[in-house]
Amino acid sequence: MNAQLQYEVEQFYYYEAYLLDHRKYEEWLDLLADDIEYVMPLRVTVDNKEGSNINKNMNYFDEKKPDLELRVERLFTKSAWVDNPATRQRHYITNTVIQPGSKEDEYNVRSYFLYKRSRSSEVETEELFGEREDVLRKTDGRWQVVSRSIYPDQSVLTVKNLAMFL
View 1 (cartoon, rainbow, N blue to C red):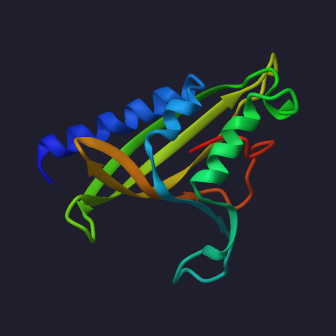
View 2 (cartoon, rainbow, N blue to C red):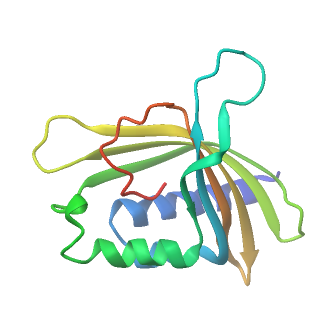
View 3 (cartoon, helix red, strand yellow):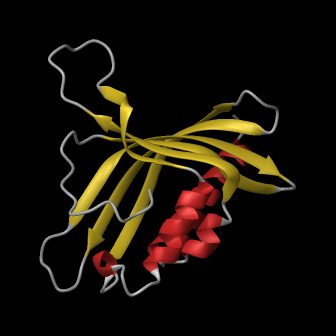
């Protein structure tokens, strides 16, 4: 991939992280294509060293855009006790690798993520880390996420809930 494309995609991810870290979820939704697939399959511990330890038949998330919109809408209600008071969060995205997609205006992008969160005055912080596989589409000069598969490295998640976007 060329340096300009690498720069554009990385800047897109940095902007996405900024929106999420600052709870600008409505703006974040605009970065998602209407036909998005947002999935986080389960990682399992297996005895063998060969093959995948991702169970694609079981998911933490398996959502489309209406599901994500509903989750965002709910975060701003009084019944969203899991996010009250609001958490402080940071999204770190690294190791971005871009390859041509199956369509002319799409790219397959692999990146690593580290998500850190603290809540209230608790001393402990929570974190998730792993790899994401995205399909990005550029339409009318604007990038959008068409699909995102999130693969956490932990087989046992140490976060108290999954009320976050990765």
